[in-house]
Image 1 (cartoon, rainbow, N blue to C red):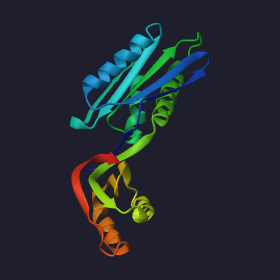
Image 2 (cartoon, rainbow, N blue to C red):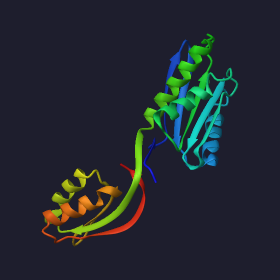
Image 3 (tube, rainbow, N blue to C red):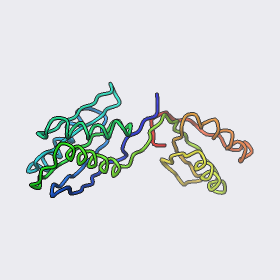
Image 4 (tube, rainbow, N blue to C red):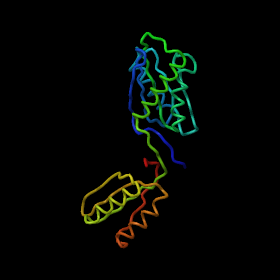
Length: 206
């Protein structure tokens, strides 16, 4: 299982080009059904738009789809898809809504506008890297909590839950290849006092 890039959350951004308004939307998706549902939601929201161009890339089965939605062939859906492919982004869907402003952009102008709308949408969704991670739980004394936080920061761990009771129990995910490094450092700075428990594996943001 390799690491991959995707967007972290649903977002949007927009700009105007020669009086045409372009609104770029992006959403993380895992399936074609999720992608189609998102596309249809934006189409319903902007039912009065001139075009609702879309593209998505899915990690599973390497599925790639795009739609020009009435724009001249190759000037809209493909440029939107190309942004995802060039950035190496998967499990994401982009919809670019256009309200025509009365000035023709020409083929080159359309390609540039749809590419730009896709790019700013993807950036607004925050590009992240997902990698195979191990989920770990560790309990420490309050006096050791600050040192644990520094250690977790040094290995870019993702803290997912912290429980304060008699001890501090922290649940976090970390890249699989860094687990042994964490084990060595924890043993070293606590003189072997603390051990951790592996509670699962998953793809997580790193």
